[in-house]
Amino acid sequence: MTISQAIQSAMSGLQAAQTQAAIVSQNIANAQTEGYVRKDVNLGNRIVNGVGMGVEVQGISRKVDEYLIRDMRIAAASVGRQDVLSASLTVFTDLVGQPQDERSLASALGKLDRALQELGNAPEDATLQKSAVAAAEALISSFQTIDRGVQKAREDADSQIDSIVRNVNSSLHRIDDLNRQIAGQASAGIDTSDLRDERDRLLDSLARDLPINVIQSGHNVVVMTKGGVTLLDNAVHELSFQTSAIIPANSAYVPPPAASPLSGLMVDGVDISFSSTYPGAIREGTLAGLFEIRDSIMPLVQKQADELAAHVAAAFQAADATVTGAPPADTGLFTDNGGPVDPLAYVPGLAGRLSVNGLVEANAALLRDGVHATAAGAAGDPTQIHAFQAIFSQTFSFDPGAGLQTAAKLAEFAASATADIQKVRSEADRAYVAQSLVLSGLSNTRLNRDGVNIDDEMQKMLSIERSYAASAQVISMANAMLDSLFEAMR
Image 1 (cartoon, rainbow, N blue to C red):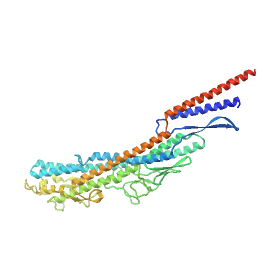
Image 2 (cartoon, rainbow, N blue to C red; image 1 turned 90 degrees about the vertical axis):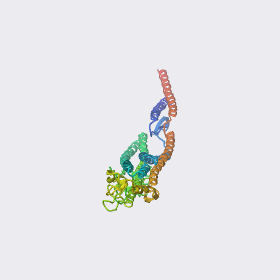
Image 3 (cartoon, rainbow, N blue to C red; image 1 turned 180 degrees about the horizontal axis):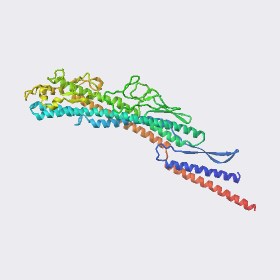
Image 4 (tube, one colour; image 1 turned 180 degrees about the vertical axis):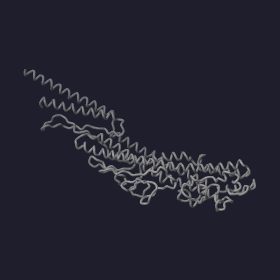
């Protein structure tokens, strides 16, 4: 090897060391950056005209475990669904309480029962009459709290779906842009590792909202749902959703091809929402959880509240001796916006429309005499009050569609309804914790494998420093040899 070759080899070593130092510095700086993948410099023997001339940088690599990433994204979708279920149901159950709580529907029924018992012992007591009416109004308030809570939960879920769909579409367009940039830079020999990091971060975020399959196609990625619906190939296939600002109790999602008052989640004309009948519908992710809240869980809670409200109102109608069944004497203590209630034929949302009969609100003594009494009865006659009291010991037949027992007392059904939604929330909480642990374990494994270990990087930096110093020493010695040669030639 000539002195010139030695200098060129040493210069290539300096250049390689500079590149290595830059990459290691970048790794250390991004050690805490979410989604950053450790970069490594690929070095190779530099050959010029068949002669070794030092070292050359052959590229910057980022090595990832695609199988690990796939498993992590599957876990992220499960966490996303359980997270929104847990959060939404926690808000609702905090509103309605446990069966034994003062604010619960079962407690409100119990208070009305006790108020009627006390009034039965002193039917002439005006204070007890008013207390019983107040207990009836408190029961109405409990029904309305549930009705408003259900409506708000559904409307909030619908609004969140709209927001997430917009974010998903935006992410898909950005991934499409990155596909093009990565392909262009790769063909030009330009490092694409940072662009791939950004693309993976977007795909990780996307996976929490809906379950996806990511297929590598050259330098590009194809994104599909787990059900096989394409979201991104050569173009973006956007999600389509129409939000509903107000969702009344009788608004229900209807799968295609029927017209539906509530929107599904469309991709190229296919409804992939959780509630659809499409075989490839999404079953995990935040979007699935939100559709489940809007179309399944909360409508069932509404059905349970309406079913109980219908039987309460109808029972008080039937127990009232002054109710003839013909207007205007067809309403009992409780009315559906001023009208009678048929437990076998009522419009959804009855729990929110139920009210105390205005006749009783104006004259509390009608609890003793009957809602439609035309004249005051005997002050101490408890007959009508005892008839009302008997309602709470009766067993009623409830619609199986409510998802609870089909035969129960009013208080039992109310307690079961409250306990049922508490159970659903508790199951969502446990599933969220369990899935979060799985995701955390996979994330830590991915971080340890693909992330930055500062101690390792500092060791690399020391090695690079020694290599740089050695190359610099070679150049210095070669220069000294040249100086000696030139001196000898003078």
